[in-house]
Length: 219
Image 1 (spheres, rainbow, N blue to C red):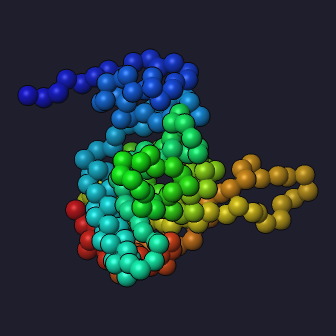
Image 2: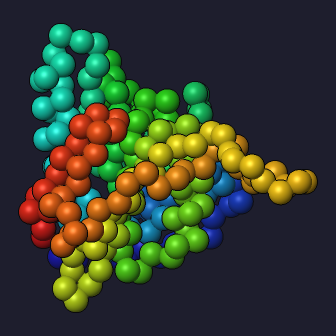
Image 3: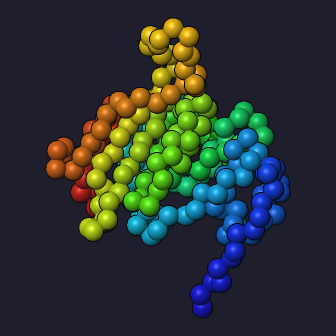
């Protein structure tokens, strides 16, 4: 039996985490809170979810190797997918939900993930995503201090990944014309990019060595 489609309700201008939790799960899972303001983040098509899963699997393999190679150190990494990242040091009314992320291992289990725990957040962009939406979200990742952001671009006919970009966090800026100040105190700058047919895969040394052949990202 198919699940009936739930119509979006008219939301208040501001919400708390507790108020969000009182919505049906189908709706609450499509909302982020930006400084307490509810923002609709609709779920992408099946292909979007599948490619996010492929990234999660590939990064999980990579972090597993990194954890094994550094088993004697305090360094430990975990990979998440569609997991809420709370941007403030406390409270839950300001969060984003990246498609995939790498964060420091947390003890004990079932801890909230804070931006200070995250070293890499990533978004998969389907052909239907609006560029201004991802730019607004990227700005919030940067303002929260997450060092690395990945952007995975999808295309259709045939469905495929057409490119991956890695952005590094910049907290200073170069010379600007007199009287001009940067709009934000932190911004992402493209640090690397990879395209099928031009490279063998993703090959990057930050936040630790990551090597993902394109074959692992085929769906």
